[in-house]
Length: 292
Figure 1: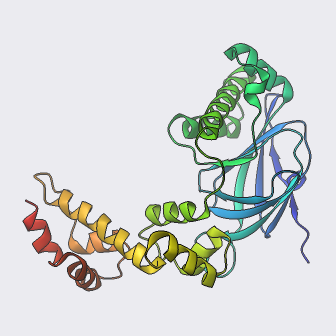
Figure 2 (figure 1 turned 30 degrees about the horizontal axis):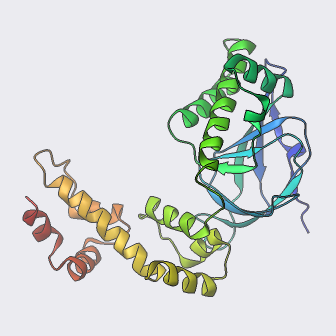
């Protein structure tokens, strides 16, 4: 049996700052052990999206980490992850690739002082976050700075790290007001809506939800009124309608029916036309003309 990957086995990138580090971690197996540390770890997922079961004090559950997502591991936390499915792999899980920002306790304290925060405001929780806007930009900027050897010096690296930590803390506080637990079916719906052009096999969707395929199909139908296949097909038809409407406007963008079919996950224009007419009562071209 292959031993679980440990953070200690990660490749560390030299840093100009003693308070901000960068490690590159390849998780080849299904298990990943997180050793206890007095430092904050913010893992930036540059590999495929994945779902994982967590095991540790007060942290049993399921995490779903998107590509470009952040996995927050607060100081003092020791636990293990076991992947339930690597998205995009129908049979064998794909290796996960993470870059890990390691932030010292001293820098966390400085972040509080400079931004007028209480230390309790940085009571971060172990959570997978889907960054967008400023949060994603800060993670990418810090990665670029550390990868290039901190060309503007340690002070600039630490400035970026403090900005990232403050933004993570703010977003976690905002989410805690509305999100109380992981919703596996919501995660599945979000994955479908974001990947309509992909194959989306039921085995993959069940893996995200952490369920067997049989149980997942039954629960999904009860929750949505549709089978997974029907839900995916309806989403693809809706996406096709949006694309057809846009290409029928004065600035059409020059997308052919085949382009739209492939972008919405249909294998051919004929299959797309058949399904579209079955659902909308008209062919794609007839429907687009009717919207003019």
